[in-house]
Length: 278
Image 1 (cartoon, rainbow, N blue to C red):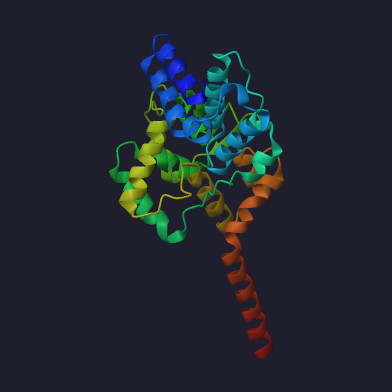
Image 2 (image 1 turned 30 degrees about the horizontal axis):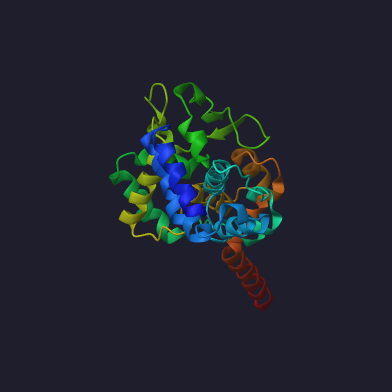
């Protein structure tokens, strides 16, 4: 029996055992990835090398880690149904696969894009969340988990209790631009899912006429960092606000300021030249 036939038998059995949504995910994995890659192979002939080529292809296409895990698990279940084990190492433990996976590009909004984007935030439903992300530097999940108890208007800070890094709890200043936005919101401030937040962001980008490539929700955190540094903030303070466990991570935002740094150097040299001529 080849893998295509084994996958068909597995899906037929799967349809009776799981929810419709889970079944459709399996169908997608089989039709879009497994059959095109290894569907014609005999189940007994599958080798470790075949599986690793399949996994490397998933990484080469830039799929998310969880998607790769899902597609790998689907192949394993199909083979297990025929009494075989998938002999490949797990893809996320394969250094070679990691080398082939393209890095995700995240680009902050530049000075010419921020104004149109903020105006778009005023027009789209749910745009308040986007403004908070842009003016606080919070991660998406941190913002979505906020409740009214996390706001201290007396100290003018947002108390982040669950952080991604090992930096633990931290306090993020409440910018004047979002002060009123955060007021009078009982309970959970933004009772929506991550997917809904992303769709609101996409609508705002489209309305503002901004290219969405490299502009996921995380670009708002990058934009905040660049604005903070442009306004004269230092890296140590930015590290604390963003909740980075290492200053090395924070220093990565300096690369987005290269053109401005050159402008500063040019102004310094011009001032020195004027002083010499005086």
